[in-house]
Image 1 (cartoon, rainbow, N blue to C red):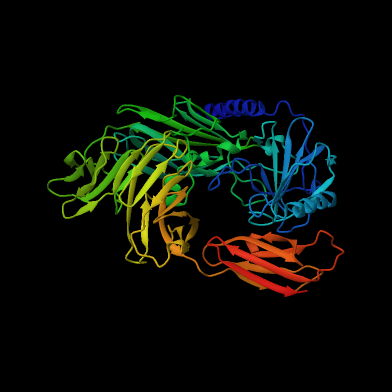
Image 2 (image 1 turned 120 degrees about the vertical axis):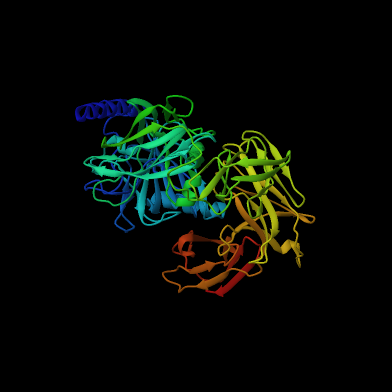
Length: 632
């Protein structure tokens, strides 16, 4: 048995390696040099394909030991095709186009090469904007491999000093730099797995006699992971994995590019993240289990293809890659994890078929509220003599029998595709369910209520959504709250809303929409008033309210040093939207580090002293302005 597993692992490694190289065959070996500290071993804080909250990580995050100002080198001969300066995102960023059709990207820089810096500064003054997106002429700024193009930094949305480095193909799809086997990165550590999860994919499926999603902690045995106990299951089952990769010398949790799921030796599902398209980045919300992540803070990789997933780096036995379990079947499950350096780890566990019964030997942990998983509504009640509940639906009252029980708690399942229940009557209480509409993916759709409407576009949803919404006054805060589902369903696009307030306000135009999933941290959305109604859009479900921000931003001056004036600017509710500085009435560039709330001046002619009438205006998203004036 040991020999067979080893042989299968070698075969898998050969197959996945050949598949991965297909994207890289046209690129010569050693075409790229390492872009920073090339004479020493480097360490990573992020790898290509790593699972982030809203996107797959593109490229490498190369550590700089918490320092800024290290030389960054052109990875290959080429010319600067694009320069971007932004408050967020990649911050100060250089794109170099190469003769082989690829592009390398260098982000979060502190400074550009002096010739590039002069060009950027002139364009910032020409555009009167700190943020610029520039496309120099072909060969306007050529660089040879190994020439310094800038200094590493912490600009943009960087969480700490590092260099973000990408290699893109001719279609601007991101390739995995680690597959070029840079000597500066060492990796002899195989991927690390922590848990697997099994999820019932329809109302008739079960895991250990129950409906839902269930996590199992893996145990390490030598170089493998196992689940010691056999899992009983029935129907269509989706398998998920919580795992990560590590590289030598760094504790950071990186992504695993190649994952293969096998059932009785046959490949059921395979993914190979050999390239990434920026246009499909938001599909990470359905590549991972978004609902589980919001509830457990663990980001699981689905080893199946859910409806609406448009990513193209999968192979599966059928349309989805679900495990199909009958009441007599036995399944020897195997998961193979392979990193970019070919290190491999295997996971083994067993599943056997078991038909659903009205009783389960596994304890039920009930939710304290109705729970929706995909198309199924779960309801919980204490076990009693009748073991029934009554649902009020548009078609009348429906008695529903318990699907199963553990002797203490009854579980009731309802197929939402059949009808949307309005209320449930338990043994000792009633509860309103607030279902309003079924919204299919891929089509325009509108939902109308007395005080609000929701409009869905063709690209709004990944999959069918069952709208649960209400508009009422919250007793704790006194705010009126429009709640549209829980934030455990991912959205591909935005939903347009028209809201008629139910409270009286002193001046409607002074109020804006905020998302208040956490009331302590309102997030400004805005909106446009049309008569007595406000229109706005949102891209994540949750709670929304109207708040007034009449407090202007604050401006705190720092000492003038070396012909540079700087300020700390803040806003306590809606946030800083814009700022503008002038000296003697002429526009003055103020660089902006949003993480530190810091802006500082930079003259076009650096030899000219910073003297004259200085004025700074800072505006928040609610339209409040703060003006600071000073004679320098």
